[in-house]
Image 1 (cartoon, helix red, strand yellow):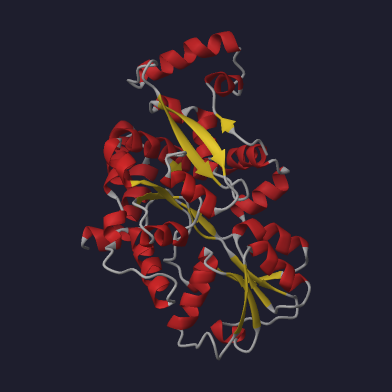
Image 2 (image 1 turned 180 degrees about the vertical axis):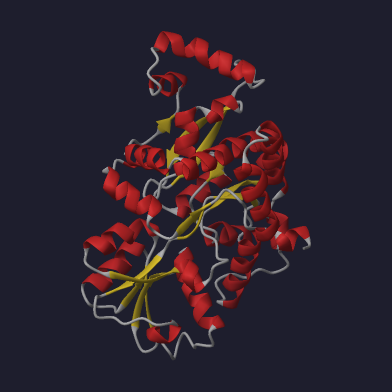
Length: 363
C-alpha cells in the first residue's frame, strides 16, 4: 500500500485512457464547467484506514467527481484511530473517514472540538466462532469466553446489546480484552476464546481460518453506526462550501457504487491491492451499509452506550453540538436540483435522511 495516495490530475485522466498532455486541458474544462477556478481549486487531506479502505473516495477520485465539484483529494493512510484523530486535531489532515464513531466521541470528551458531518459504513462487523458453536440469540454468549478489542465499535455495540438484553457483563460472560482486533481473532483461532467480536478488517482472516460468522453487529443493533466523516468544528465552520462540495462528490460516488457494483469492486481491489474475489467479498458480502448519510440517531445512541458502559465521562457535553446534518442535506438538495432524473438522490437518499436523523430534525 502506498504511504501517500495523492490524487493528481494526470493520474485521473490517464485512468480514462487520455494522454497527459490532454489531461491538463480536459481538467481545466471540467473545472470551468463546474464553476471552479483552476487557480483556486483546493486540496482536502483525507485520512483513511488502508485496512478497510475508502470506496467512496476511490470512486470520486477515479471518476473525477472531486475535481468536478472543485477540489482535489489527498488520501493519507493511518492504521489506527488514535494517530488519525491526533493528526486531525493538529490540522495535519482535514477529514477522517473510517475511524469509528466511539473514537471521535471519546476524543470529544477529552477536549477535542470535532464535528461528525457524514457517514461511511454501518454494520458489517462479524462475531465469529468455531464451526461447533451454536448461536440462536444473545443467550448463546452466556458462560462463554468472548474475545474483544476494547473500545472498538463492535465491542461497544456487542456490550450495549448485552446490557439492553438484561445481561450482566461481569457475571454472565467472561470477557477477554485485547488491544487489537487481530489479537481477538487469534484468540478464537487458538481455542483460547469461544467467540470473537470482530471488525470488517478481520473478516477475511476469520473466513480463511475456517471460522463461522454467527451474527453481525447490525443484527445486534440495526441503528448502530460505525465509521463517520469527522472534521474539526472550526474547519467546517470556516469552509462550509468546501464541505458541501466534498459531500456532493461522495454522494455521487455512493450512487455509482450501488448502480455499478462490479466497477466498485474493481476500483476497491486496485486501491486495496486485493484480488477481485477478496475485494468483492469484503465490499459486497459483509452485511455492511455503505451510506454517506450522517445517521445522527445512531451517533446519539452510541454516545449514550459509551456512558452506560462507563467508557466516557460526558460531563455537560451536548453531543448534538458535535453533529452537523445540515451540510449533508444542503449537498443532497443541490444534487437533487442538478440531477432531477436521479431517483436515488430524490427518493432513496431523501427518505433515508428524514428517517435516520429524526432526533435532530425533531421528528
